[in-house]
Amino acid sequence: MRNNQQKSILIIGGGLAGITLAHQLLNRNQLVTLIDDGKNASTRVAAGLVNPLVFRRTTLSWRAAEFLKEGWEFYKELEKKLNTTLVEPIRIKRVFPSSQERDEWTKKEDLVEFKSHLLKIPSSSNGQSYGIVKSGYVVHSENFYIKNHQYFDDLGILKREAFDYSSYSPSESCYQGIVYDHVVFCCGYRVFENPFFKDCQVKPTKGQMLIIRHEGLPETESLHLKCFVFPMGNKMFRVGATYEWDNVSLRPTKKAKETLLAHLTHLTKTLPVVVSQPVGIRPTTMDRRPVLGSHPIFENTHIFNGLGAKGYLMAPTMAKEMMLYLLDNRAIAKEYSITRHQTL
Ligand SMILES: Cc1cc2nc3c(=O)[nH]c(=O)nc-3n(C[C@H](O)[C@H](O)[C@H](O)COP(=O)(O)OP(=O)(O)OC[C@H]3O[C@@H](n4cnc5c(N)ncnc54)[C@H](O)[C@@H]3O)c2cc1C
Image (cartoon, rainbow, N blue to C red; front, top):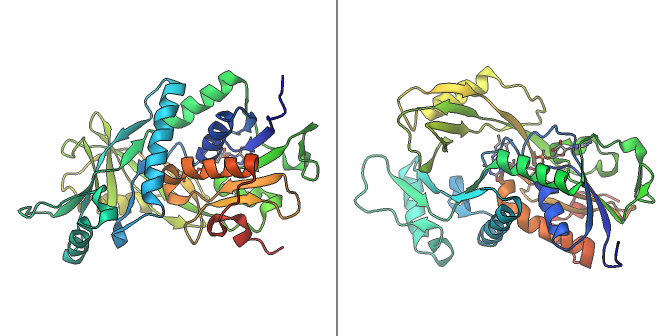
């Protein structure tokens, strides 16, 4: 029986945003229904790397330390719930493209905020010089997506179907005859289909990767120079990823394959065997901040989107903030509120 603390919440989109929000709400004993049409194009193809650094600028990502810690705790807790392995620590090796970047890195090593993330570069290192990020981890993206959907299926709260916008009445937050306390759209790059958030400035950024077999690459660390190379076990690796703005085609291209193979030559001279070429589409924003909040008129119609290229780092904390907004009226900071996109 429903108690008066419980709200009924419909989430549309069962990618990273919808999954993390569903768990944050279920942890508060709310009544969640999730709709996903299975056309996931980002969460399950992502490399799932959680890296607190922005290499190009040798800076920490936005709220990196907080997101890293909360994310780790969230994914570890989820492993127990789902009875599977989702997350593992990984050394992330940045091969420096220039002596300037190496000098910049050396300057940062001793700063308090970087100390827990960087391993000191050995002064005797020669050959290809590099720095190591020691605080990163990887979320096994495909397993994360599949096991979460199985879990929601077992709870009987997942509807594997397309959301029909014409059957939704936002003034009553009523979908197909059922009135919800809150309806939250977590549709990733497909926000452009949504008539209620037309002004949301989340844009699609296509990303292509290669899955390769290779005998010589390291199996215990992730390498970064021009591209990333990421071990998957049994001599298989992900190589990625490209960035193509405003492109929603899910077709792999020859050009992307050639670009990635050319990038790979900076890390190994041995040719790989290309096994496949996954394609995904990230929901990105110009200011690299997510988008949380409500419709300006229909106050029970909400959005949680814009997780961009670092969704696995941001999602657990951002989903928690979205949950606190829905259940406790906790304000959303302007920096990542939908109000920054709304004109009304
Ligand atoms: C190539 C690539 C590599 C990446 N690598 C990393 C990485 O290493 N680390 C990292 O942190 N991030 C990475 N990302 C980014 C990460 O994948 C995204 O930030 C994240 O997955 C976005 O999640 P989302 O839930 O917002 O969107 P999505 O994963 O796109 O999920 C949206 C869901 O909504 C559903 N949906 C949409 N409309 C409807 C509808 N009308 N009815 C029903 N269902 C609907 C879709 O089927 C989908 O399942 C990568 C992305 C790509 C493409």
